[in-house]
Image 1 (tube, rainbow, N blue to C red):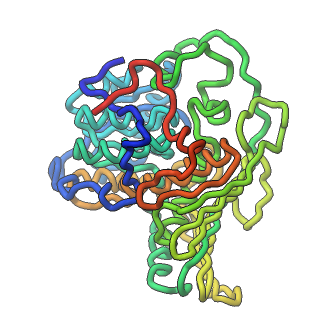
Image 2: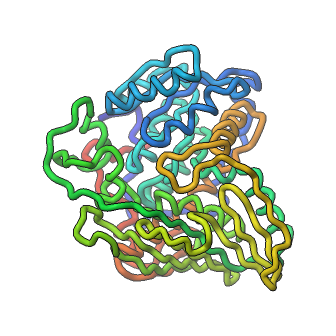
Image 3: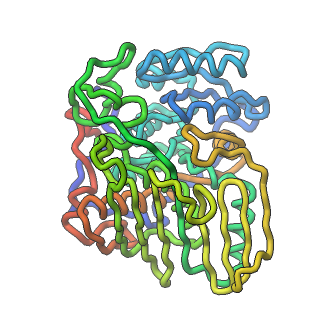
Length: 446
């Protein structure tokens, strides 16, 4: 597979002057100029028509978005047909159906790529889009590993393109409100946050050699990942749990959201230390190949701490909700999730409770809702020069780094120190997982 420019640079630890935790990674002001005109329609393509696709129907179909869907792209034929059927109920025109993202990106009339492909495609597809002149909305996790995390931010600056990650709670009105109150001292000095998620995921089939499903372009689905024969149950969702070739486990799948809110509330960037306790504890002989239970601790400067508690297959509601974030301060505490927040004083008395009546999905597969709609519309308005991103990639990548640190600590079975200025890990075993092995021909530069 070739592009005009190669998008990834070979990783050399000695020369990796990573500045992911540094403000030098911020996009230039030019990225926020009136790029296509305040009232110009935005032409959109969606790549990846799986469970998140429905989240993009409203922000594209709503009149006030002034957007037009030009392409529905997926490597599975049935997904393309499903997407067309879903969108046809909300728009009065017919987008083009396309198997190959390269054909989509070659169309100069496309302004924005919504990248909702599997995790291992997020950074490659997004950089390809920027190289082709497109702005990008990339679903979480924005990267598969730390090297891609770094390269994605560098690419946004290099190509001068606007990139928003799908950490949609950054566009949640009630979350913005309570985070602002926290920053203004409503709970004193915030010092710790607990980000959590629990679900009752069931048994996962073991992978078995199988014929490639009808209509699936298996080679293109694998993209930058090393080639292998097809195994059953892989392409449609269980790739999340089948090793590290494609997914980023539950920390990347859902922890990204909650850890992002925690980091936002505490106003911290890159941690100085990470430690995890994690294990596969349920259905011990099934096909799930990574942890399904994790507790991660991140220590930051100024003695601030974030804890991540993820229970993929034990749905006990430890904190009274399936997901959310608790922020502790010297004078009180806050619970916030996608639908509400509760403010407590230091003695645990409720001071204020606010239910936003948001329709944003919680732990159900797929998700979507009013906050996702606002998040995509925020990208559109930023492209028009009418707004600023609520989740620009230079900041979102710092939350993504926490996911990668947690997964690396699990994989090497030990904690490690981190340079909070560069993002580099002070551990040889950890740094060996900074990048990954790519399929020959995909180790690109830009």
